Length: 290
Image (cartoon, rainbow, N blue to C red; front, side):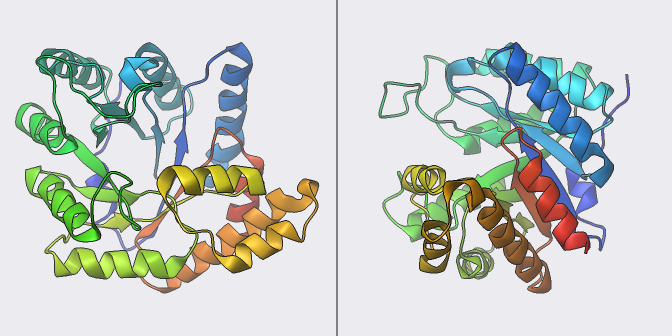
C-alpha cells in the first residue's frame, strides 16, 4: 500500500493543477463506464482525481471501493469526498481512519445535501451541522491530510447573501482547509470576481475553478437551476442554434475557451466535472494541448 501526497503540495508548484471528478457507479454498467473513462483519461496525467460521496452515506462503500481502484489500479492521487449527512462524529472518524489506513491522505470536506425528499439539512444526533466542523475534525485527528472545501462563485443556494457566504467560507479556511474547488460556473468573470472577494475577506488559499462540460441544453439548465449558476446568453444561443447531437461539442468548445482564459488570468489550474464520461474531457484536454 502506497501513501498518497497532500494535494496542498501540488499547489506549491508553478505548474497549473489539473484534476477530474468521478462519482460512484450505481450498477455494473456504470462500473464499467467509470473504469473505461479512467483508462482513457489516465494518459493526460491529472494531478489528482476526486470521487463523490452519496447523501446519507448511500454510496459510502462504493466510494471506498472505487477510490481504492482509482488509486491502486490506475495510480491516481485520489481525494475522496466526505459529507456530514447521516453520520455521527464517531462514524466520521471511523471513515477517516479507514481512508487513512488505505493510504489516502486527501479529503474533500462537505456538509452535503439533504437526503432525497428532504428540503433542509438536519444533522443526526451526535453528528455535525457544518462543513467547518468537519474540516476542524479532520485537522485535529488527521493533521497530515490535505483538505479541500467547496466554494460557490455565485453564492450557495441556501445562503442569504454573498457576504454571508464568504463569511462561512472564511470559517472553513480558518478551521484548516488547504484549498477551495468552486462549484460549476460558465462565466469566467464570476470566477475572477469571486477570487477578488476571497482575497478581500482574507481568504488566501488557492481557488481551483470547477468546470462542467455541457452535454445538452436540458442538462445545463438543470444544473444552473440546482446551483443557481448563470447561463451566459452566448452559451445559451450557441446551444439553441445547434441540433442536440452537436450540443456536446458546443459545450466542449465553451469549456476549452474557459480553461484558456482562466489560465491566462492566473487561475492555479482547473477541475473538470467529468461525470464518468471521457469524450468531452478528452476534447477539452486535446484542445488545450493544441
